[in-house]
Length: 462
Image (cartoon, rainbow, N blue to C red; front, side, top):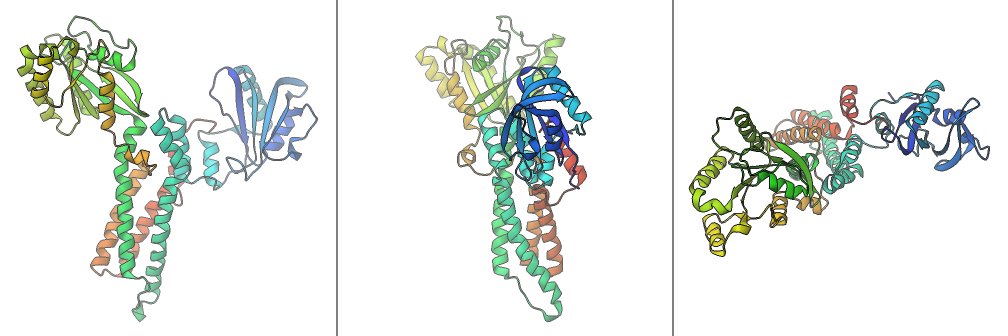
């Protein structure tokens, strides 16, 4: 059911600032705004054109609360599809609260989280996947996640799903028609064309499902664990990457007892670096807990950076190789970057020997910040950004991913039924289930519980 009451909320972040924006949306939004607004030119907001700005004062009876600028957006030509006004006032928290309390007394109620966007969805201004992209856009903190959210909010993903759903729906209608003429034993749906369509849908669904591996790490950041023995420069490397003194650096082995995390954007992709406790045999209870946490972080990481002191390779090379093999054996599927630190201390012959012993090695000097850019490029190479560069649809939402998986399962069932001459009525059931999963993504099929779960994660005022 589409609500008709008027809601109000602060649309800008809470706290003091230069200005604040208070948003009202609903059937009576402009009338309510007009009841508290006195234009400097004696205009009535109710008679003004949509998408216009008006300077005046917010009045609580005869008391002036603030000088404001009011924007008018008449439905359906507004974000929510309803009458909407936005009051730009001075950013004092006192002024914000006074105006909101006044509007509540005049008939508004406080908006729930995401209720403005929910109304946009209910009024057909956005489909569900576009509405969810609004939340992703607000939370995007790097170029890649911003680009994906913008592409989805403009309807790229929705259009792709809608096209597949429409084509499948056309064939579903023909299959249903065959059921009505079952006694005549006629076929309205061309089986060859239907098979080609199913192959095309299967191909697109697999591509979208595969894109989630990239989309998920872009959205949430790629966790990178920096591991190695104590005192090889792990904390120095973290500081060099972040270009700040984030971790304590000391000559004393075992300084890092717990994990330290921070984020960095490289080439538009967010990376979350985790500086871990040095791996070694120890009787120190606190340090041993830190080492246990190191292996937990390796388990959670997308990429592992193994750091060692290249100047000590002559002495500890055998031990190093054993440690490397242990990590490779324990985490065989994780990308591993092997870094020889303190390379500024090496002679040319030592560099050549190291490269022949460990061909994939990357030599750096974290202290002198040499080779740090090479490491960044190596990390970026692990992320398949080809789809991003080509502006292809990338799935980042777990709910969408789940529906795509289920839709693919149903399409495979339909294909199997087609190839084994399954009766039309049984095929029709699988087609309906596939259509249902497509509808779940765009919101053509929905329920109150689903909407509640989605919009509860929005901020109030959006």
